[in-house]
Length: 147
Image (cartoon, rainbow, N blue to C red; front, side, top):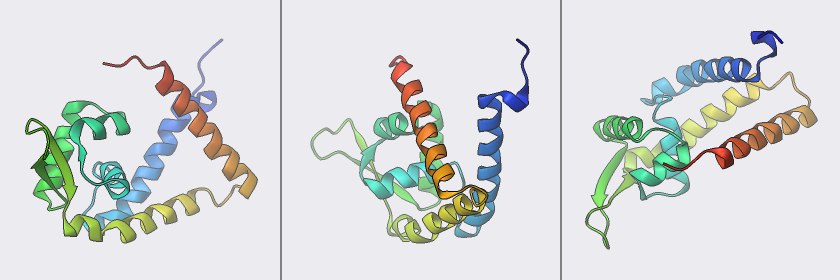
């Protein structure tokens, strides 16, 4: 069996992700956001006050990448780090008022990117695509060995 990028799920997923990222970048850059900070913001908008480790696990990224992302987000006034009230060794990441204020505009931008990208699909195809992507991600995460 020969490799063909046009039949490779990994290649196609990566290509599609680059297209989504390009379009999302164009929409959130005016808000002062990047595609690097956007996933962390999504997690914090859902549950503020997470630890760096929790964010790293939820986003399935390297600790060093998360540390760099959080440093940029702090520099940009999106988050602040505060010691945990019960364990002084732990720092929690909290959204600033500015970070909180971007929730609506940023998620509307992401929804618009999704709608545009998937507008050629029927509602049933859209639903099936999302379900299959969720299944692949869940399977891959279940197979991953914890650090």
